[in-house]
Image (cartoon, rainbow, N blue to C red):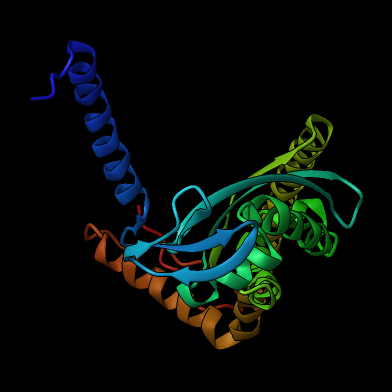
Length: 269
């Protein structure tokens, strides 16, 4: 019977667990998973050998390399500067939602690379932001904010679609102007408010003057009408009315008459 030395026994205890561990590691490394909302490309010695959607997939351990991408909508924020139509420096912050499609992942990796947001999207945003902002004066940018964002959205959707990147929408989250420009805008607003108050005051004085003229014209017309209706008959009527009032006040004494061509006048005593 062959004798087994303690050294031989210890060697087997060490080797077999290592073999099992290596086999398990090799089996584990022969597969990769792609989670929901992601896609992947498999590279073998730097060459693309396939694109994969979500699920479990095979690879050669130590030989194949896997690059994963998110195909969900991503939101990136970009800060850039541009010159307005009147050569004012404008700082902008833009929020852009974008995504890539699973069936374009191989083309995206080959043509744009895994960092396409930095290498392609950001330069595109900066270029076309400058082109659009140059169409507007600085003081009109805020009031036309929606229109500027809409124009940028349309341009970038078309340009990035050519690169197989889907841009969902763009929003301008911030405008920044130089302190000198902001001061000039404030002074302009104050001047416009003062001019408006002055205009309102002039209109008020003008209306008051017009009202006085109308009132004077009405009074003059009234006096003219009164002069036109005064006649000899009206004068005689007023004299008769005066006599009737005197008779009402008579205390029974004989009245005194004044001689003359005119109608007798009752004198109350």
